Length: 173
Image 1: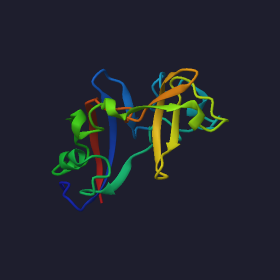
Image 2: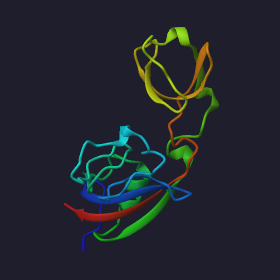
Image 3: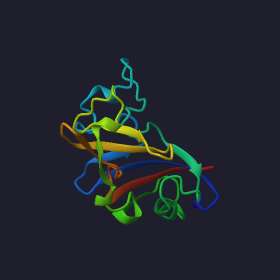
Image 4: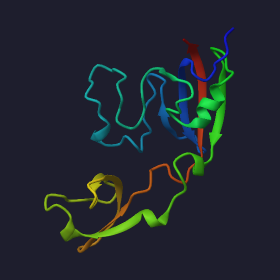
């Protein structure tokens, strides 16, 4: 049986979880979103027929095919797949610093409400995209509101979290 090598086109299934078991991403069809992440209409994929389209919470549907060695997900996943045979499964843990980074308090900032668009009415917990002075988009979460200011967190939602991936090599092409 063939073993996966760098440069091969491989197809995998994976499930990414946090240490507490929370699933944050998966290619497995029919995987339901985490209730906390999908408690609002933003996760409605518009399907009324039970289809498995992306729910908007980072969950893909169906196996993923990519060229091994291009680090499409994380380099540690590519390294784990090298040498695997179709049907084989592995579980790897990627520490926070090598995954989405450590949580950094310097990524928390406050903006006067007067600097926000007049039609923006933020609420604590809102996930927004802001544009900085260099016209770069920054994804943020609203942390705190006062009458004069809004405090945002631009850390990745999984910053500071070790992530665990269960990987199954489906095929090598």
